[in-house]
Image (cartoon, rainbow, N blue to C red; front, side, top):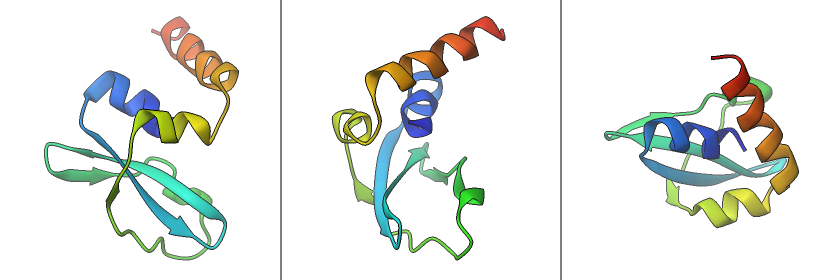
Amino acid sequence: MTSLVVQDYFGGDILTTQTPGGTHFYNRIDGKMWDLTVSQFAEPVPYDDTPSTREAALADTSPEKYALLVSRLKASR
């Protein structure tokens, strides 16, 4: 879900990789990889930079959770 919001604000691409816990989404902006949620992992993430889509990232969460995060970010500005 974080990768969606990062793309909303900064553009770029959504990438994915497989971790022992499942699919993990992150971003590439202007050629640089950004993973704002990497701290959730105890082990290094095996990044393979597989291109993904907003639809795939949204399918990994719920539209309600995404909308809640977006509204909280807007309210904090």
